Each structure stands twice: as C-alpha cells, then as structure tokens.
Amino acid sequence: MISKKMTALMMVITTMLMIAIATVSPVNSSAGEDLLTYLRTPEAQDELDNITATRESVNRVKVLHRGAASLNVRMKLIENARRFVYITVPYWHPDAIGKRMYELLKYQKTISKPNLEVQLMMDWSSKISVGDTSGKKITNDLNALVDDPIVRWNHPDWVEVWSLKLFDNHLHEKIFLVDGKDAVVGGQNIGEHYQGVGPEGWHDTDILLTGPAVQDLLKYYVKKTELARWLKRVSNTMRWSMGAVPRACLLQDYFMDKDLSCKSYFSYINDYRAQTRYPFEQSAEDELQRLQNVQSELQQEEMQQKEMQQQKDGLFTEQFEYDSDLSGVRVVLDLPLSSWRPENTHWSRYSKVVNTVEFLLTHAQREARFFIPYMSISWQMENALIMAAKRGIRVEIITNSFNSLDSGKVTYKVAIGHYYRLLQAGVKIYEWQGNKPLTDIIDNDREQKQQYYLQVMSNFATLSLDEQEKILDDIAGIYSDVGFDRQLYRQLLNSGRINVHKLSSLSVKLAQKYQCSIPDEYWPGATTHTKVVVIDGVASMIGSDNLNVRSETYNSELMALIIDPIIGAKMREIFNYDIGVTEKEQKGDEELIQCGDRLIPRPPLTKEITLEGDSELFTRGKLLKARVLQNFQKAM
Image 1: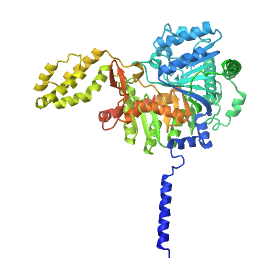
Image 2: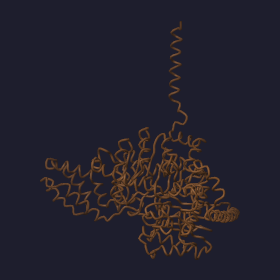
Image 3: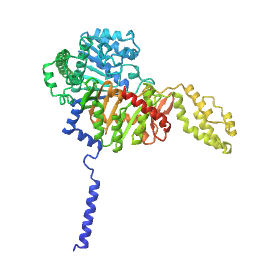
Image 4: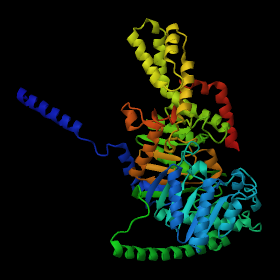
C-alpha cells in the first residue's frame, strides 16, 4: 500500500511537470512559421511545381507601394540601362507621366546611348483604351522610337477564330525589363492614375525583382513577341495544318519548361513535337541566345567596373536598397490560349494563379488577406475563400466601393452577390472609400464635438455663467475667424434656436477660410488597383491578376509568388494601415496629419461591410440582379 507521503510526493511531481509543460513554448508555435516550414518541404515544392508550371528561384525583392515609388525605380532603371529595355503594358497614357517616360527613353536612345534597344508590347486595344485612336497623342511617337514596330497582342488582323472575339485573350500583364537583370512587375500601367500622387493618384503596388526570375520573364517576353510577329502575317495561321494536336498543347510546350496536362493525356504529342517545329520557335531560341550573349558581355563589363571602383575607394554601392535578398520567387503566368486541359470528353480552361491561391488557402494556418479591386470573382475563388473562413482562417478582403470603382457600376452590382455568401461564412470585407472632399473631412473632424454641444444646448439657459462661458470659448476655438459672433450665439443658445446645420455651415466656411489641403502622400488613392494576396504573412502573390472572372478566363496575367516572411510582413503592414490597424490606432490614439496650420485625423481609407450595418445592400431584388449578372458574366 502506497504511503500518504509517497502519494503527496507523486502529486507534487505531477503538478510540477504539468506547469513545466504549460510554460514551454511549442515548436513552430507561430502559424506563419508552420506554413513556411511546410512550403519548404519537397512535397510542397513538387506540388507548386505542378500547379504553377515553373520553378522557384532565389531573388532580391523590393516592394514598390504606390505609384511614385514605382515611377522613381522605373526612371532610374531607364537611366542606368545599357543594352535593352523591354516593356509589356496594356495601357500607355498620353498624359504628363506617359510623355515624361517617353521623353526619357527617347533621350537615352537617341542621345545618351544610341545602341540602346527598346521594345514594346501592348494589347491590340491599347490606343482605343487610352483615347489615342489616331495615335497622334503618343502611340505614333512610341512606334517610331522602338527598334521594331510595337507588338500588338491578339490583333483582329490576325484573322484567327479567337482574335475576332474582341473581348477575349487580352494582354493584361505588366513587365518592365532592363538588361535581363532587373524587372518591375505588378498592377501599374503607365500614366498619371498609376504613378501620380495627390487626390487623383491610385492605390497600387509593384515589386522590383533582381535575380533568376528575371530570366523567366525575359523568356516569356521573347517567346510571346516572336509568336505575335509570326501570327501577324495572315498566311501564318494557328488553325495550322497540325493534325489532331490541340493548339493549347503546342503552346504549353512552347511557353512552359514543364507541361502536365497535354503530354500526359495525348501519348502521340511527344512524337509529333520531335519532328515538327514552327518558325517562331526557332526565332525565339535564336533571340534568347543573342540576349544571353549580350548579358554575358554586360556581366564581364560590370565585374571590371566593380574592380575599378573597389581599387578606387574600396566600396561599390548597389543600385537599389532591397527589402529582401533571399526571397523564393516563382513567376506564375496565365495565357488564355494555352491554359486549357483535357477533362473526359471536353477541354476546360483553368487558371494557374487561382489554383495557386486555392493551394495556399488549403494550407493556411492563421490568416489570408486579399486586395481584389474588382469583386466579380469566379465560383471557384468564392468557394475557396468560404472554405478557408469556415476552417477558422481569418479571411479579409479590401475591394472598391460604389464610389471608388473605376470600371462601371455593373461590376459593383455583381460584387454584392458575392458579398452575401462571403460575409455569412465569416469573411471580412472592407470597401475602399476613395478621396472625399476636404470639407467632408473637416466636418468629420468636428462631428463628435458637434454632437456634444447639441446635447448641452437644449438646457444651455439653465447652466451657470461659468459653464456657459466655457461652452462659448470652445465653440469660438473651433470656429474662429469664420464669422463667429459670440453675443449672437449666446442669444441663440439661450433661446434654443441653434442646430447642427448652422454648425456644419460654419465648418464649410472654416475649410474655405484656411484653404488647407492634405499633403499628397496622405491621400489614400481615388481607386484601389492593388492586386495582392498574403497568406499567414509568409506567402505573397503580387502582380496584375485581379483574381476575378475576367483575369481568370480572358486575360493573360502575371503574378509573382514570393515565399519570404520579410516581404509578407511588409504587405501585411500595408493592409493593416489601409483598414486602420496601426500601432497608434490600436492604442486608441488618432493618427493626425497637418492640414494648413491645423491637425486633423487621417481620412479613413476603408469601411467594413457587415450584413447588419449594410443590410440595404442585400435586399432580395439586389441579390437576384447580382446573381443574374454573375451568371451572364460567366457565360460570356
């Protein structure tokens, strides 16, 4: 029989062990660390290889948040370019920034570096989209500047079945390549909306890449331009006399290092491809070999310059300060002509970007944050978000509001149909508020004080003289120099004949009197155009894909998948700032900015949408219209 002393000793030991276990932090306690650990396993790497059809490489990455940051880097890259500048952009606007970039390229090519090669690829509809149909505003000048005529992707004069469908197969990716070493990718076109500052500038995000991923972008650019040049000749049709080999299989083999859907399904494709080559394939190989030689020469010249610089002062300064030097990067590319796979008796379109997002959501442990400018998302994307939220993942989305949306109101009506299911599942949705008039901001600054004064005004006459004087002092301080008459206000307050409208009218006069303006860097952006995904703060996707039906089905798109907690933390910081979760605001302090000689609260960038607070959005009629529009959109 166990003695009482022994029993007591065992209880003490057991209690101490339990306390020790409870106080020791478990391995990989952070959900972000858990996801990072998993994404570094061979199993996850193989799965991502299959989904993205690309390989991960180690690169330097710099986040370029907002247009001015991206513009500065692009201009510096042009200034330092030595051999070639290749640009893919849907829209080059003929405004001040569009002309400024053109003038710099022209100076570099015609005066500073006559041997500089400049190439430009645009969507066939670009001139129409920027209001330069005749080309006289800027397009003709650009065409005269580049070494070859501007490559127009999927132009109707290709006379292909798909090119005659004017709403399909548009170029939407943005690539800014210099010397095969540096590249800027993201959501920004070229123009004041994207790179401008102040009330008209947009909320947008790019990244600068330096490293092997730039070579992946260069290959894609060269292969796409060579294919487009070949198809421009009417005799070279992709209805091709190619037997039964599907066009998608050929293009998958052409663009990707690793093809999964076609060769595994059609056993004869390997034999067919072994004996059949098209001229554009050979010209692409020749061009890539030429550029490889150019880059080898550049590397030798750069090494010599570094040696000379080190001998001179023992220091060689890098061109940019990067956020991270060891980021795992995959360039995920979607091309509507090739992103098809056989399923049973038919072919189905798929999106590598959306499949990658779905994979990351499946393995998320803590949170998933999205910038989705246009919420006309697909059912696949909607279901992936809902499943993650129901699994306990904190899913948050920033999208445009009715007032900030630039693509027309139909897109907003489609979005509402998605809102309802997403909100029911626990997804948080924040709408971008855009730029309100300054008088609205001044009014908001006074709203709480106004409400307080209205409460005490009803019994102003019953207050002591000291209390009355204090209230009048406060009001005078708010509305000084805008016609405040102390005696008149005392009479109005005593008689109860004053209301909030009189106070509001004075706040408008105040804004006019001070003529203050918010500094450019504090304007939130008229529209949010950022396309970003951040999962658990370690996996980020940044690029051109809007994660909606149009991007998933009809556009060629590019997203950089970056596995790096440093980049993830920067993107989380941007998201937190936009929803008002800053260190100051978490402590209950307002973030104040200077407006003239006054301090006012930072304008709210977003508003959270809730089923209860915004119930008017979710009436049966509106939801029915949204569903009809969604189905129509999917069927287009």
